[in-house]
Amino acid sequence: MSNHTLKQRFWEIDFWRGIALIMMLIFHFLVDFEMISGENLRLDYGFWSYFQKATAFLFLAIVGLSLKIAFNSGKLTFHHALRRGLKIFLWGCLITLVTKIALTDGAIVFGVLHLIGTGTILAYPMLRYKKVNLWLGLIIVIIGYYLDRMSFPFYFLFWLGFVPRGFYSLDYFPLFPWFGLILLGIYFADLLYPGNQRRFPVKEQPSPGLIRWISILGRHTLPIYLIHQPLFMLLIYLAIYGWGSPH
Image 1 (cartoon, rainbow, N blue to C red):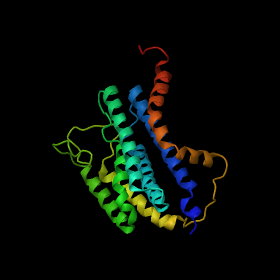
Image 2: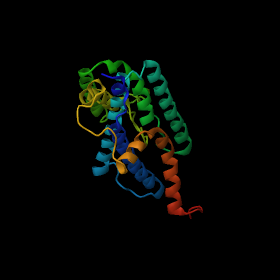
Image 3: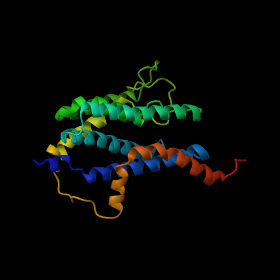
Image 4: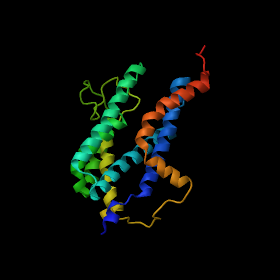
């Protein structure tokens, strides 16, 4: 197997990450609109609830898949995983600080960036394994499913998925069940890209047009994630109230 084959970038992964990003932007725009306008869009029920879960599933599975491909290519050492994980986690901590200052309720204390940062580090030892990631991932998802239906009289394990009584956060992704999806992504990487070679036929480069633009978006998810909420809130506020203060 050539080094070129091992180190190539699979554009279709960027494409699906871009799709997940667009889905997230749509949902967050609706959340921001609901919060600023006071309208009840019932985002916690029915279609939009499944839409949110599908977005998270796609995003986090791609995190695991990308980690495995980078590991196989020799680009990901523990040092790199630790540094990247800490960087993403610290961005999450900044969002925690900002939301605690800006919001009266629902501050983000263990959101998706906290999860991805922590998961990047925790997943590293699992990158050497194959089927164990399938079973462990499923176990974590199942445990998280049941934990989500309970509440607990303590706070210190909220990051694991032990939801404290009365707890509310606008963006909450504890390790149970969501880290399980990262492990499942690692398993699917072995299934779909054994030895970092595609198991399915696809063009080497995306066709010009929308697919290529979505793939480009998928390469820049972190900066887009960091700026989209303030931008959405500003645009929605201006659309509803204009440049003046609301009366």
